Length: 88
Image (cartoon, rainbow, N blue to C red; front, side):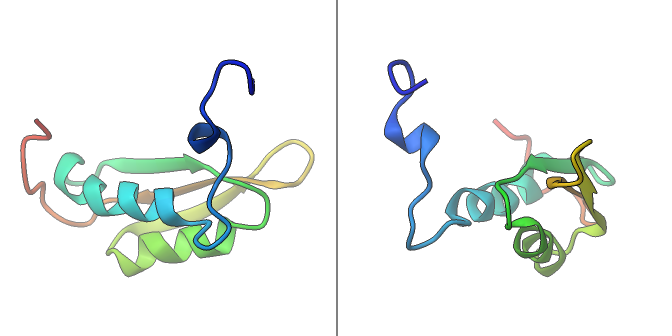
């Protein structure tokens, strides 16, 4: 992968490992239809923090799902707010 993907796509900044999740959660408020779902595939050890980002942003029905090995793998939440824009 390192030969084909930029470092930014492969490695998260140590100073703020949730930076990309924060940006996506913030923008999802504009793009998701009411009741729409936002799902993340997460890095190991970030499940609770990513779920809290969703809760703090007003998402409901948040949940952390585990993979077949028992590791936290997916965080999801449902939008509980009206769409703010067309997403264009």
